[in-house]
Image (cartoon, rainbow, N blue to C red; front, side, top):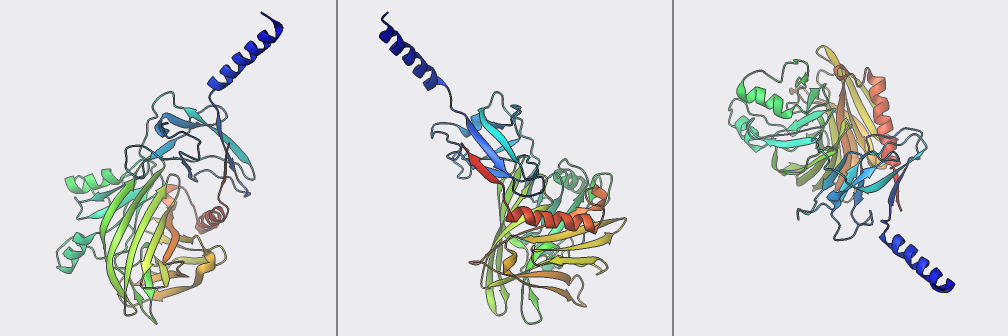
Length: 390
């Protein structure tokens, strides 16, 4: 073979080898804060990951620098049977950067449903949701009608109820099973936690109101629900409320709620028409706890004694600049004791987070630790993780 021919032949072999080598997609996650980042969910679309239309997203997984597969959640948002979005939670040290790689999945990942929600017809019509840290519920139209018709077991409330769990595994189905089979009660702690948080007609942990001159107007129970996803990283669902009157106008309210793994706070994306302001509340119960608020950072909290333990509840808004003030409202009417964070709406919408930390779960020991969690949560919202894909 002539030298020139040999060179051309070798170049051809190299080109063939290179063309057969699969390109590597690197995902760099940058943290600009002096806080470590762990339970923050990164959303990656199929196109952002440089995958072809014919590629199946479920065939891929995110691995760290040691080639260890990360927990991921595949999302089929348009319900066409194919995932378009991948969720995962990177770990990044303070003021640092972590690198991950998109890799072909060698074996099927076991998807443990940690973030869960569902409609509960066996207990009138609650809607309940949870992750590995917290659990909540709201009440539906059947419970409302029962209350209005003076039928035992009814509930009339648009407040957010807290289920105080102290285990990382799911408890919703287990606790409701106790109720339906009458083998126990979730109002008594047998080692997993309990529901001893009273809501009544209060705002509970993050319910909303519209303020008049000296009155707070509130909606009734939700009328429609739709579960959007459950999985190892995120549960998401929507709620719709019947139009309710405030300041002489009808208010239309819909909301999407999202709870991610490792988080004590649920995200509320609320759409309201008929008002340009909103008041987000936390019940004060007996008004014996400690109120803390920070307008600049956009949060408020309440730390109180609750039976044989202590509980912190909190609100964090995504746009502190829209906060117009704080208020404490106390009435002789039972349950109408709330503290409020008051905010303007941005194009008829607001995004905020609400949740709790229970001392008995050993996550937070006092109000100082709970308030630090809320303050750091606010910092993370203002400085989201930077995602660079190459």
